[in-house]
Length: 249
Length: 248
Image 1 (spheres, each protein chain N blue to C red):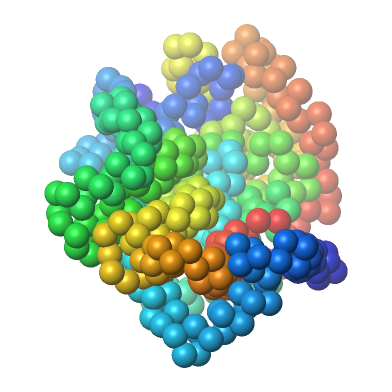
Image 2: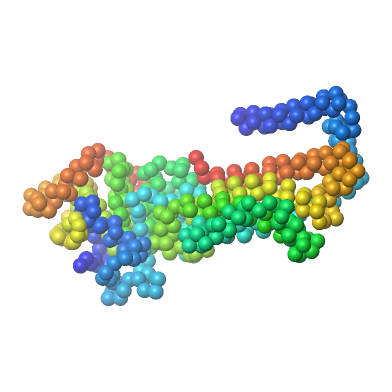
Protein backbone atom coordinates (compact mmCIF):
# COMPACT_ATOMS: atom_id res chain seq x y z
CA UNK A 1 0.00 0.00 0.00
CA UNK A 2 2.72 2.38 1.03
CA UNK A 3 4.83 1.40 -1.97
CA UNK A 4 2.01 2.22 -4.39
CA UNK A 5 1.54 5.56 -2.71
CA UNK A 6 5.24 6.33 -2.98
CA UNK A 7 5.31 5.46 -6.65
CA UNK A 8 2.38 7.78 -7.24
CA UNK A 9 4.07 10.63 -5.40
CA UNK A 10 7.27 10.15 -7.38
CA UNK A 11 5.33 10.29 -10.65
CA UNK A 12 3.22 13.20 -9.55
CA UNK A 13 6.15 15.47 -8.70
CA UNK A 14 7.73 14.78 -12.11
CA UNK A 15 4.46 15.57 -13.85
CA UNK A 16 4.03 18.81 -11.91
CA UNK A 17 7.52 19.83 -12.96
CA UNK A 18 6.72 19.23 -16.63
CA UNK A 19 3.48 21.18 -16.42
CA UNK A 20 5.16 24.20 -14.84
CA UNK A 21 7.89 24.08 -17.45
CA UNK A 22 5.35 23.92 -20.29
CA UNK A 23 3.45 26.89 -18.91
CA UNK A 24 6.64 28.89 -18.44
CA UNK A 25 7.76 28.17 -22.00
CA UNK A 26 4.42 29.23 -23.38
CA UNK A 27 4.61 32.45 -21.38
CA UNK A 28 8.18 33.28 -22.46
CA UNK A 29 7.67 32.06 -26.04
CA UNK A 30 11.31 32.31 -27.17
CA UNK A 31 13.84 29.73 -28.47
CA UNK A 32 15.83 30.29 -25.26
CA UNK A 33 13.26 28.23 -23.34
CA UNK A 34 11.81 25.52 -25.56
CA UNK A 35 8.68 23.80 -24.29
CA UNK A 36 8.96 20.21 -23.04
CA UNK A 37 6.86 19.05 -26.00
CA UNK A 38 9.45 20.48 -28.41
CA UNK A 39 12.27 18.92 -26.43
CA UNK A 40 10.55 15.55 -26.38
CA UNK A 41 9.99 15.68 -30.15
CA UNK A 42 13.66 16.44 -30.70
CA UNK A 43 14.54 13.67 -28.30
CA UNK A 44 12.41 11.23 -30.23
CA UNK A 45 13.94 12.23 -33.55
CA UNK A 46 17.49 11.99 -32.22
CA UNK A 47 16.65 8.64 -30.74
CA UNK A 48 15.17 7.14 -33.89
CA UNK A 49 17.18 8.86 -36.63
CA UNK A 50 20.04 10.69 -34.93
CA UNK A 51 23.09 9.51 -33.03
CA UNK A 52 21.75 9.89 -29.49
CA UNK A 53 21.87 6.18 -28.70
CA UNK A 54 25.46 5.94 -29.84
CA UNK A 55 26.63 8.86 -27.71
CA UNK A 56 24.55 7.75 -24.79
CA UNK A 57 26.01 4.25 -25.01
CA UNK A 58 29.57 5.58 -25.10
CA UNK A 59 28.94 7.77 -22.07
CA UNK A 60 27.30 4.98 -20.09
CA UNK A 61 30.22 2.69 -20.85
CA UNK A 62 32.61 5.32 -19.49
CA UNK A 63 30.43 5.77 -16.40
CA UNK A 64 30.34 2.02 -15.80
CA UNK A 65 34.07 1.45 -16.20
CA UNK A 66 35.19 4.38 -14.09
CA UNK A 67 32.53 3.57 -11.49
CA UNK A 68 33.75 0.00 -11.12
CA UNK A 69 37.39 1.06 -10.92
CA UNK A 70 36.63 3.75 -8.34
CA UNK A 71 34.53 1.40 -6.21
CA UNK A 72 37.08 -1.40 -6.30
CA UNK A 73 40.11 0.74 -5.47
CA UNK A 74 38.23 2.97 -3.04
CA UNK A 75 36.84 -0.03 -1.17
CA UNK A 76 40.21 -1.73 -0.91
CA UNK A 77 41.89 1.43 0.36
CA UNK A 78 38.98 2.22 2.69
CA UNK A 79 39.16 -1.23 4.27
CA UNK A 80 42.91 -0.97 4.82
CA UNK A 81 42.63 2.53 6.28
CA UNK A 82 39.73 1.53 8.51
CA UNK A 83 41.55 -1.56 9.71
CA UNK A 84 45.10 -0.26 10.26
CA UNK A 85 45.53 2.87 12.30
CA UNK A 86 49.05 3.51 11.04
CA UNK A 87 48.02 3.42 7.40
CA UNK A 88 45.11 5.67 8.26
CA UNK A 89 47.35 8.19 10.00
CA UNK A 90 49.82 8.15 7.13
CA UNK A 91 47.25 8.64 4.38
CA UNK A 92 44.61 10.75 6.06
CA UNK A 93 45.95 14.17 5.13
CA UNK A 94 46.54 13.04 1.55
CA UNK A 95 42.95 11.89 1.51
CA UNK A 96 41.71 15.29 2.65
CA UNK A 97 43.83 16.87 -0.06
CA UNK A 98 42.46 14.51 -2.71
CA UNK A 99 38.90 15.21 -1.58
CA UNK A 100 39.41 18.90 -2.16
CA UNK A 101 41.14 18.91 -5.54
CA UNK A 102 38.63 20.29 -8.05
CA UNK A 103 37.47 17.72 -10.59
CA UNK A 104 38.50 20.03 -13.38
CA UNK A 105 42.13 20.06 -12.23
CA UNK A 106 42.34 16.28 -12.18
CA UNK A 107 40.80 16.10 -15.64
CA UNK A 108 43.14 18.66 -17.17
CA UNK A 109 46.21 17.11 -15.59
CA UNK A 110 45.22 13.63 -16.76
CA UNK A 111 44.74 14.85 -20.31
CA UNK A 112 48.08 16.64 -20.28
CA UNK A 113 49.98 13.73 -18.79
CA UNK A 114 48.32 10.83 -20.61
CA UNK A 115 47.15 12.60 -23.76
CA UNK A 116 43.58 12.93 -25.02
CA UNK A 117 42.93 9.23 -24.64
CA UNK A 118 40.21 6.97 -23.29
CA UNK A 119 42.54 5.87 -20.50
CA UNK A 120 43.11 9.45 -19.43
CA UNK A 121 39.36 10.10 -19.43
CA UNK A 122 38.47 7.08 -17.33
CA UNK A 123 41.42 7.62 -14.98
CA UNK A 124 40.40 11.22 -14.37
CA UNK A 125 36.84 10.23 -13.49
CA UNK A 126 37.92 7.37 -11.23
CA UNK A 127 40.46 9.56 -9.45
CA UNK A 128 37.76 12.07 -8.67
CA UNK A 129 35.54 9.46 -7.13
CA UNK A 130 38.01 7.27 -5.21
CA UNK A 131 38.49 9.59 -2.20
CA UNK A 132 34.79 9.77 -1.37
CA UNK A 133 34.49 5.98 -1.61
CA UNK A 134 37.48 5.65 0.72
CA UNK A 135 35.93 7.96 3.30
CA UNK A 136 32.61 6.09 3.34
CA UNK A 137 34.07 2.59 3.35
CA UNK A 138 36.62 3.50 6.00
CA UNK A 139 33.73 4.46 8.26
CA UNK A 140 32.23 1.02 7.69
CA UNK A 141 35.51 -0.79 8.27
CA UNK A 142 35.85 0.98 11.59
CA UNK A 143 32.40 -0.15 12.66
CA UNK A 144 33.01 -3.84 11.97
CA UNK A 145 31.69 -6.04 14.78
CA UNK A 146 34.64 -7.70 16.52
CA UNK A 147 32.42 -10.28 18.18
CA UNK A 148 31.31 -11.67 14.83
CA UNK A 149 34.89 -11.71 13.57
CA UNK A 150 35.81 -13.72 16.68
CA UNK A 151 33.21 -16.32 15.76
CA UNK A 152 34.87 -16.75 12.38
CA UNK A 153 38.27 -16.96 14.08
CA UNK A 154 37.27 -19.51 16.69
CA UNK A 155 35.56 -21.75 14.16
CA UNK A 156 38.52 -21.58 11.77
CA UNK A 157 36.47 -20.20 8.91
CA UNK A 158 38.76 -19.74 5.90
CA UNK A 159 40.03 -16.24 5.07
CA UNK A 160 38.00 -16.12 1.88
CA UNK A 161 34.73 -17.14 3.51
CA UNK A 162 35.33 -14.86 6.47
CA UNK A 163 35.77 -11.96 4.08
CA UNK A 164 32.76 -12.75 1.89
CA UNK A 165 30.28 -14.00 4.50
CA UNK A 166 31.27 -12.26 7.72
CA UNK A 167 33.21 -9.11 6.89
CA UNK A 168 31.81 -7.78 3.64
CA UNK A 169 28.12 -7.95 4.62
CA UNK A 170 28.90 -5.52 7.42
CA UNK A 171 30.14 -3.06 4.78
CA UNK A 172 27.12 -3.37 2.48
CA UNK A 173 25.26 -0.32 3.82
CA UNK A 174 28.40 1.74 3.38
CA UNK A 175 29.10 0.34 -0.07
CA UNK A 176 25.54 1.12 -1.13
CA UNK A 177 25.87 4.68 0.12
CA UNK A 178 29.15 5.05 -1.74
CA UNK A 179 27.63 3.59 -4.90
CA UNK A 180 24.63 5.93 -4.76
CA UNK A 181 26.55 9.12 -4.31
CA UNK A 182 29.19 7.69 -6.64
CA UNK A 183 26.93 7.32 -9.62
CA UNK A 184 25.50 10.79 -9.12
CA UNK A 185 28.97 12.30 -9.05
CA UNK A 186 30.51 10.19 -11.78
CA UNK A 187 28.03 10.81 -14.52
CA UNK A 188 28.43 14.55 -14.05
CA UNK A 189 32.21 14.33 -14.21
CA UNK A 190 32.10 12.04 -17.24
CA UNK A 191 30.27 14.75 -19.18
CA UNK A 192 32.96 17.31 -18.34
CA UNK A 193 35.66 14.87 -19.34
CA UNK A 194 33.93 14.28 -22.66
CA UNK A 195 33.44 17.97 -23.24
CA UNK A 196 37.13 18.67 -22.70
CA UNK A 197 38.87 15.86 -24.45
CA UNK A 198 36.73 13.31 -26.26
CA UNK A 199 35.05 13.39 -29.65
CA UNK A 200 32.01 11.36 -28.73
CA UNK A 201 29.64 10.86 -25.85
CA UNK A 202 26.90 13.00 -24.37
CA UNK A 203 29.37 15.58 -23.04
CA UNK A 204 30.90 16.06 -26.47
CA UNK A 205 27.44 16.48 -28.02
CA UNK A 206 26.47 19.03 -25.39
CA UNK A 207 29.62 20.98 -26.23
CA UNK A 208 28.61 21.02 -29.88
CA UNK A 209 25.10 22.18 -29.05
CA UNK A 210 26.59 24.89 -26.87
CA UNK A 211 28.54 26.28 -29.82
CA UNK A 212 25.32 26.56 -31.81
CA UNK A 213 23.25 27.74 -28.84
CA UNK A 214 21.02 24.76 -29.53
CA UNK A 215 19.11 24.72 -26.26
CA UNK A 216 16.56 22.21 -27.46
CA UNK A 217 19.35 19.75 -28.24
CA UNK A 218 20.98 20.32 -24.88
CA UNK A 219 17.73 19.70 -23.03
CA UNK A 220 16.87 16.65 -25.14
CA UNK A 221 20.19 15.02 -24.30
CA UNK A 222 19.90 15.98 -20.65
CA UNK A 223 16.47 14.45 -20.61
CA UNK A 224 17.64 11.21 -22.13
CA UNK A 225 20.52 10.99 -19.73
CA UNK A 226 18.46 11.76 -16.65
CA UNK A 227 15.92 9.14 -17.70
CA UNK A 228 18.64 6.52 -18.01
CA UNK A 229 19.97 7.38 -14.55
CA UNK A 230 16.50 7.14 -13.03
CA UNK A 231 15.94 3.78 -14.67
CA UNK A 232 19.34 2.51 -13.52
CA UNK A 233 18.47 3.54 -9.99
CA UNK A 234 15.11 1.78 -10.18
CA UNK A 235 16.16 -1.49 -11.81
CA UNK A 236 19.72 -1.86 -10.49
CA UNK A 237 20.50 0.07 -7.33
CA UNK A 238 17.25 -0.20 -5.43
CA UNK A 239 16.64 -3.93 -6.05
CA UNK A 240 20.26 -4.64 -5.18
CA UNK A 241 19.93 -2.71 -1.96
CA UNK A 242 16.72 -4.50 -1.10
CA UNK A 243 18.38 -7.85 -1.73
CA UNK A 244 21.40 -7.03 0.41
CA UNK A 245 19.34 -5.82 3.34
CA UNK A 246 16.54 -8.42 3.12
CA UNK A 247 17.59 -9.91 6.46
CA UNK A 248 16.63 -6.77 8.31
CA UNK A 249 13.37 -7.16 10.22
CA UNK B 1 46.63 -26.20 36.95
CA UNK B 2 43.40 -27.17 35.31
CA UNK B 3 42.82 -30.28 33.29
CA UNK B 4 40.05 -32.23 31.67
CA UNK B 5 39.78 -35.79 30.42
CA UNK B 6 38.63 -36.54 26.89
CA UNK B 7 34.85 -36.40 26.79
CA UNK B 8 34.59 -34.94 30.25
CA UNK B 9 32.09 -32.23 31.08
CA UNK B 10 33.82 -29.73 33.34
CA UNK B 11 31.98 -26.76 34.78
CA UNK B 12 33.95 -23.78 36.00
CA UNK B 13 32.27 -21.54 38.53
CA UNK B 14 33.55 -18.44 40.21
CA UNK B 15 32.60 -14.87 41.02
CA UNK B 16 32.81 -12.07 38.48
CA UNK B 17 36.38 -11.04 37.92
CA UNK B 18 37.79 -14.52 38.50
CA UNK B 19 38.81 -14.63 34.85
CA UNK B 20 36.43 -17.33 33.73
CA UNK B 21 35.82 -15.80 30.32
CA UNK B 22 39.49 -14.95 29.94
CA UNK B 23 40.32 -18.57 30.57
CA UNK B 24 38.09 -19.67 27.68
CA UNK B 25 39.44 -16.94 25.43
CA UNK B 26 42.97 -18.14 26.13
CA UNK B 27 42.07 -21.71 25.26
CA UNK B 28 40.30 -20.54 22.10
CA UNK B 29 43.28 -18.42 21.08
CA UNK B 30 41.22 -15.22 21.10
CA UNK B 31 43.43 -13.90 23.84
CA UNK B 32 47.14 -14.61 23.65
CA UNK B 33 48.62 -12.64 26.51
CA UNK B 34 49.60 -15.22 29.07
CA UNK B 35 52.41 -16.95 30.88
CA UNK B 36 52.19 -20.69 30.90
CA UNK B 37 50.89 -23.08 28.34
CA UNK B 38 47.90 -25.09 27.24
CA UNK B 39 48.48 -28.68 26.20
CA UNK B 40 46.56 -31.46 24.55
CA UNK B 41 48.01 -34.96 24.93
CA UNK B 42 51.26 -33.39 26.09
CA UNK B 43 51.59 -31.18 23.00
CA UNK B 44 50.95 -27.45 22.92
CA UNK B 45 47.37 -26.68 21.86
CA UNK B 46 48.32 -23.71 19.72
CA UNK B 47 51.30 -24.09 17.45
CA UNK B 48 52.19 -21.97 14.42
CA UNK B 49 48.80 -20.33 14.48
CA UNK B 50 47.11 -23.70 14.21
CA UNK B 51 44.85 -25.38 16.70
CA UNK B 52 45.44 -29.04 17.48
CA UNK B 53 41.81 -29.86 18.19
CA UNK B 54 38.52 -29.01 16.53
CA UNK B 55 37.05 -26.36 18.73
CA UNK B 56 33.49 -25.21 19.31
CA UNK B 57 32.64 -22.05 21.23
CA UNK B 58 29.25 -20.97 22.53
CA UNK B 59 29.32 -17.34 23.54
CA UNK B 60 27.13 -15.46 25.99
CA UNK B 61 25.34 -13.89 23.05
CA UNK B 62 24.15 -16.06 20.17
CA UNK B 63 26.50 -14.25 17.75
CA UNK B 64 24.80 -15.45 14.59
CA UNK B 65 25.48 -13.63 11.34
CA UNK B 66 22.28 -11.61 10.89
CA UNK B 67 22.60 -11.64 7.08
CA UNK B 68 22.86 -15.43 6.83
CA UNK B 69 19.91 -17.78 7.11
CA UNK B 70 19.97 -20.36 9.89
CA UNK B 71 21.28 -23.05 7.59
CA UNK B 72 23.93 -20.74 6.13
CA UNK B 73 25.02 -19.78 9.63
CA UNK B 74 25.59 -23.45 10.35
CA UNK B 75 27.29 -24.11 7.01
CA UNK B 76 29.64 -21.23 7.67
CA UNK B 77 31.58 -23.17 10.29
CA UNK B 78 31.94 -26.25 8.10
CA UNK B 79 34.97 -26.46 5.88
CA UNK B 80 33.63 -28.70 3.18
CA UNK B 81 30.15 -27.56 2.44
CA UNK B 82 29.03 -29.95 -0.30
CA UNK B 83 28.79 -33.20 1.60
CA UNK B 84 27.58 -31.68 4.84
CA UNK B 85 24.29 -29.99 3.91
CA UNK B 86 22.44 -33.23 4.50
CA UNK B 87 24.12 -33.75 7.83
CA UNK B 88 23.22 -30.22 8.95
CA UNK B 89 19.62 -30.74 7.82
CA UNK B 90 19.52 -33.97 9.76
CA UNK B 91 20.78 -32.26 12.88
CA UNK B 92 18.24 -29.46 12.44
CA UNK B 93 15.45 -32.03 12.21
CA UNK B 94 16.73 -33.74 15.29
CA UNK B 95 16.61 -30.58 17.37
CA UNK B 96 13.32 -29.41 15.90
CA UNK B 97 14.64 -26.48 13.87
CA UNK B 98 13.81 -27.70 10.36
CA UNK B 99 11.02 -25.16 9.96
CA UNK B 100 13.29 -22.21 10.42
CA UNK B 101 16.29 -23.28 8.36
CA UNK B 102 15.62 -20.51 5.84
CA UNK B 103 14.85 -17.86 8.46
CA UNK B 104 17.16 -15.02 9.33
CA UNK B 105 18.24 -14.72 12.99
CA UNK B 106 16.27 -11.49 13.44
CA UNK B 107 13.08 -13.39 12.72
CA UNK B 108 13.71 -15.76 15.63
CA UNK B 109 13.14 -15.40 19.34
CA UNK B 110 16.12 -15.09 21.66
CA UNK B 111 15.71 -18.68 22.79
CA UNK B 112 15.66 -19.93 19.21
CA UNK B 113 18.78 -17.94 18.37
CA UNK B 114 20.57 -19.54 21.32
CA UNK B 115 19.47 -22.93 20.14
CA UNK B 116 20.89 -22.29 16.68
CA UNK B 117 24.08 -21.05 18.24
CA UNK B 118 24.27 -24.22 20.33
CA UNK B 119 23.72 -26.39 17.27
CA UNK B 120 26.42 -24.45 15.44
CA UNK B 121 28.90 -25.51 18.08
CA UNK B 122 28.10 -29.17 17.48
CA UNK B 123 27.69 -29.16 13.75
CA UNK B 124 31.43 -29.31 13.12
CA UNK B 125 31.86 -32.20 15.59
CA UNK B 126 34.06 -30.43 18.11
CA UNK B 127 36.59 -32.30 20.18
CA UNK B 128 36.68 -29.47 22.66
CA UNK B 129 33.67 -27.30 23.39
CA UNK B 130 33.99 -24.02 25.27
CA UNK B 131 30.85 -22.44 26.69
CA UNK B 132 30.83 -19.00 28.26
CA UNK B 133 27.64 -18.64 30.31
CA UNK B 134 25.58 -19.56 27.28
CA UNK B 135 22.21 -19.59 29.06
CA UNK B 136 22.59 -16.36 30.96
CA UNK B 137 19.53 -14.10 31.25
CA UNK B 138 17.11 -16.54 29.68
CA UNK B 139 13.81 -17.41 31.27
CA UNK B 140 13.79 -20.64 33.25
CA UNK B 141 11.90 -22.93 30.84
CA UNK B 142 13.99 -21.81 27.87
CA UNK B 143 17.22 -22.28 29.78
CA UNK B 144 16.09 -25.71 30.92
CA UNK B 145 15.24 -26.77 27.37
CA UNK B 146 18.60 -25.58 26.13
CA UNK B 147 20.40 -27.45 28.90
CA UNK B 148 18.60 -30.59 27.91
CA UNK B 149 19.51 -30.06 24.28
CA UNK B 150 23.12 -29.49 25.27
CA UNK B 151 23.22 -32.77 27.19
CA UNK B 152 21.57 -34.62 24.30
CA UNK B 153 24.08 -33.33 21.76
CA UNK B 154 26.97 -33.84 24.14
CA UNK B 155 25.82 -37.42 24.73
CA UNK B 156 26.04 -38.12 21.01
CA UNK B 157 29.47 -36.69 20.26
CA UNK B 158 31.11 -36.54 23.68
CA UNK B 159 33.40 -33.57 23.21
CA UNK B 160 35.34 -32.35 26.20
CA UNK B 161 33.36 -29.42 27.58
CA UNK B 162 34.55 -26.44 29.59
CA UNK B 163 31.38 -24.76 30.77
CA UNK B 164 31.73 -21.42 32.52
CA UNK B 165 28.92 -20.22 34.72
CA UNK B 166 28.42 -18.46 37.99
CA UNK B 167 25.39 -20.49 38.90
CA UNK B 168 26.42 -23.34 41.14
CA UNK B 169 23.17 -25.16 40.61
CA UNK B 170 23.54 -25.07 36.83
CA UNK B 171 27.09 -26.36 37.12
CA UNK B 172 25.98 -29.25 39.32
CA UNK B 173 23.13 -30.13 37.00
CA UNK B 174 25.38 -30.36 33.94
CA UNK B 175 28.90 -31.37 34.80
CA UNK B 176 30.93 -34.44 35.68
CA UNK B 177 33.20 -32.24 37.70
CA UNK B 178 32.90 -28.68 39.00
CA UNK B 179 35.91 -26.42 39.51
CA UNK B 180 35.70 -23.34 41.69
CA UNK B 181 37.80 -20.30 40.89
CA UNK B 182 38.63 -17.62 43.43
CA UNK B 183 38.49 -14.01 42.40
CA UNK B 184 41.63 -12.07 41.54
CA UNK B 185 43.91 -13.86 41.25
CA UNK B 186 41.73 -16.57 39.80
CA UNK B 187 42.87 -19.95 41.05
CA UNK B 188 41.19 -23.31 41.26
CA UNK B 189 40.36 -23.49 44.95
CA UNK B 190 38.02 -26.46 45.03
CA UNK B 191 37.14 -29.37 42.83
CA UNK B 192 33.89 -31.32 43.26
CA UNK B 193 33.06 -34.45 41.27
CA UNK B 194 29.36 -34.81 40.58
CA UNK B 195 28.45 -38.47 40.49
CA UNK B 196 24.73 -38.16 40.02
CA UNK B 197 23.03 -40.11 37.24
CA UNK B 198 21.84 -38.28 34.14
CA UNK B 199 19.47 -36.90 33.01
CA UNK B 200 19.50 -34.34 35.76
CA UNK B 201 17.59 -31.14 36.04
CA UNK B 202 18.12 -27.96 37.93
CA UNK B 203 15.20 -28.67 40.23
CA UNK B 204 16.16 -32.25 41.11
CA UNK B 205 16.24 -32.95 44.82
CA UNK B 206 19.68 -34.55 44.58
CA UNK B 207 21.10 -31.42 42.94
CA UNK B 208 19.53 -29.27 45.61
CA UNK B 209 20.99 -31.45 48.34
CA UNK B 210 24.49 -31.32 46.88
CA UNK B 211 24.15 -27.58 46.36
CA UNK B 212 23.13 -26.98 49.98
CA UNK B 213 25.76 -29.37 51.32
CA UNK B 214 28.48 -27.47 49.46
CA UNK B 215 27.26 -24.17 50.81
CA UNK B 216 27.40 -25.48 54.35
CA UNK B 217 30.79 -27.10 53.81
CA UNK B 218 32.51 -24.15 52.15
CA UNK B 219 30.59 -21.08 53.29
CA UNK B 220 33.45 -18.58 52.95
CA UNK B 221 34.38 -19.94 49.54
CA UNK B 222 30.95 -19.78 48.04
CA UNK B 223 29.42 -16.80 49.79
CA UNK B 224 30.27 -14.30 47.04
CA UNK B 225 29.09 -16.71 44.43
CA UNK B 226 25.75 -17.35 46.01
CA UNK B 227 24.89 -13.72 46.41
CA UNK B 228 25.42 -13.22 42.72
CA UNK B 229 23.46 -16.30 41.98
CA UNK B 230 20.50 -15.02 43.90
CA UNK B 231 20.41 -11.85 41.85
CA UNK B 232 20.92 -13.67 38.61
CA UNK B 233 18.41 -16.42 39.05
CA UNK B 234 15.64 -14.67 40.90
CA UNK B 235 13.35 -15.62 38.04
CA UNK B 236 14.80 -19.05 37.53
CA UNK B 237 12.30 -21.20 39.36
CA UNK B 238 12.71 -24.83 38.43
CA UNK B 239 10.00 -25.83 36.04
CA UNK B 240 8.53 -29.27 35.80
CA UNK B 241 7.42 -28.97 32.20
CA UNK B 242 10.70 -28.26 30.52
CA UNK B 243 11.27 -31.23 28.26
CA UNK B 244 12.34 -30.52 24.74
CA UNK B 245 9.16 -31.20 22.76
CA UNK B 246 10.88 -32.44 19.62
CA UNK B 247 13.48 -34.70 21.18
CA UNK B 248 12.61 -38.34 20.95
